[in-house]
Length: 464
Ligand code: NAD
Image 1 (tube, protein in one colour):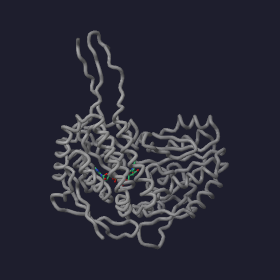
Image 2: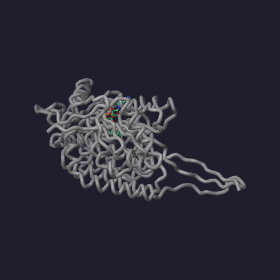
Image 3: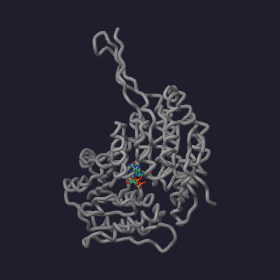
């Protein structure tokens, strides 16, 4: 049955004023399953006005009051987890068990984490840094936050945005991806009677709605999870009025497999981290860099893992076409050793794929593939491994697989990425900051760092 997806403004669902709409396609079947309202600038104005009004009082709510509201919000989301999972699966084609039992509970835990974290804000000491003047630091909310999310983990990305912002005392206008707004809209609707009216607003629509939000004069901070191109456009729009910007952009994670790595557990974990969510993950373990002594065995084992892995579809026909074109455009020295084809079935599926023989300046190495594709390169010494790993524009996540403590410590120091792990790929938790360097953007989601990013520092002084 086709369902409708609306904006949520002031806690209530509402169709966009101009009455436009967009069909949502189930990527597992290629057929329409919902119709989402399509906003215009006037709808963004209305949502920002609602958030501004809410901010006036929410900013002064005590940490205990904010915490209590967030804890209630988490309970409500938990009660509706099945329904939220169904919406998410219909929009994304994700496996239902992973969505229901992993992604949604992990997201709800983020809400609970911020319910606690907002009560323990810390700061440097208040004191007399100038004789006769007592100085202190206030940590205040920023104001109305415009937040823009992608389609790969729609529910989780929305929570990663609004929960710290709201916990810090801000009010939010969130624009989900035009491909996957259902769970975000329903979440805001469910929380309509939990959060004070206007604290969390959702506007549905595409890039033009995101642009209107980023350029809005009353939006004090814009946070985006999306592509570097979008991050760049948003940062330019925000610069016009010096609004704060927070960018979680793409990744292109290197996975350095040393000659002393335990290949059994390494290959299993790397294949899992590469093909999870059909590789549509900014932390996907996509770029394997294997020591020449183990390269051939790593390739063979990854190819076997690719052949026995079952994955969901890519998000859209366009996304699959993009990944297939990247593979088709690979140079003659590249070799597809597993997968590479679209299976003959409905939906936007693509086989888990392994490509070898690539050089550092090949597009498959330099660009974020965002599909179920592992590239494998070979290296001789640690210096070369580091040069290959760091030799891309993105800087989100990296891992190194080794039995050597000294090598592990050197790679932890010298890999130029916002998260680096040894013998694990991209472990994540509500407490742990997530965010990158370079073209992966700046600012952190999650952890107390995520909360800090939604606050501003004020020096207050009182002369005696
Ligand atoms: P996208 O940049 O095309 O879209 C992301 C969001 O931005 C969508 O809501 C879209 O409507 C909006 N948007 C697009 N153009 C805009 C503009 N000019 N102004 C304002 N808003 C605009 O990205 P996507 O295809 O939805 O998602 C994939 C990208 O997101 C990948 O690059 C991926 O790595 C990245 N991503 C990053 C993280 C992270 O935490 N670093 C997490 C998930 C996804």
